[in-house]
Image (cartoon, one colour):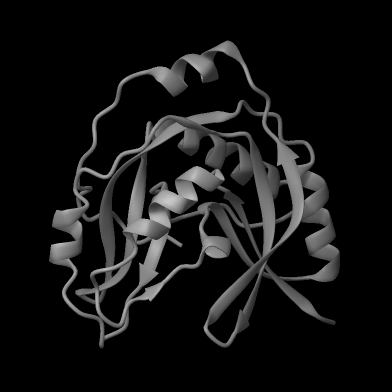
Length: 204
């Protein structure tokens, strides 16, 4: 039986993706993400068979959560075995995204997906780094004040990841609308600060 490599994510609006793509330079031999690959992972699921994939898609259909107002806020990196592995852009505020992550996790648990055990750090991956990649510090310093106009994540997506030449390709499988409310609109216009994020725990 064929398997499907799934994850749940938020897709930034076009203007935000264009801003991120414009910042993607300055680290030699980095594998920068394409516009199609830009997303904020809410929950990595992994390989499942077709029947489990259908159960997951149906379970997420019960997702009832508010849209998430956010801004880009700084950049950071993940390390693996003491070496830079991933460069990412942060988002603020983090708690609404974390709350949505918890709701998704609860729905997945109902269909037998093991709960997430790693610390959740909301981020949008910009580049993946091999041992051949150049210095990361200049990039982090240059974009330490990365910020954006307020924007809203108004839907979540179930994606299937397909490995191929030049990296993974992400195919949307299902879309789940997040409802708008007054609190979301207020949060979208609230002031926030930018920063260089401290090195967080590793995250998918």
